Length: 207
Picture 1 (cartoon, one colour):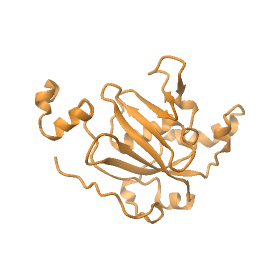
Picture 2 (cartoon, one colour):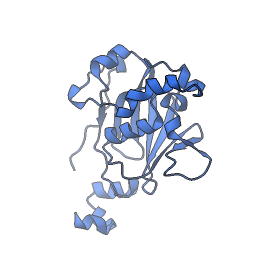
Picture 3 (tube, rainbow, N blue to C red):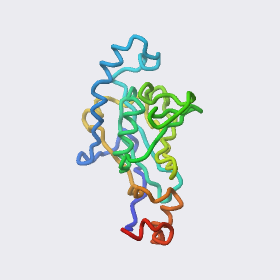
Picture 4 (tube, rainbow, N blue to C red):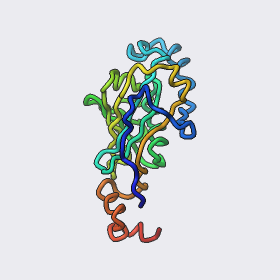
């Protein structure tokens, strides 16, 4: 495995140069958010309080791995957590073949088809702006419950200039390749990187 550059950019978010070839497009679900928010008379105060022109600069880091694997991109503040899940999958390079959830402020959010019980909030009904309303707020995105891939999602800027977003697109920056699916989490990935995973799991002997 080739060594990846782990040096994070020195520039402030306002000064970053983005590679338009790596623009991250939002999912089609995002196109309907404004109409849905306006039509929902019973929507939460958090959703109504968010302007459609509010954008977040978000950084996501895969925890437990060195060198650090991270991504940074723009999203609307009122993006649903379900739509954010789709973007995180694409940004990190996962294949969306396992269950997932979010944790923020002691509250869990998830897909009802993957969860049972009343203590988990439905991710379709809650937004990033609700779960992490301010600059510096964090939430944890968990992918593949057996492997327990934990991603720290941080709001780097909660009032990013829409003009910059329009000029650059939902640009993606970052460093490090995503681990392969089904390598059994951080411990398995460490063995994979050292060329030992074939002795750790017979699955990899077939590849």
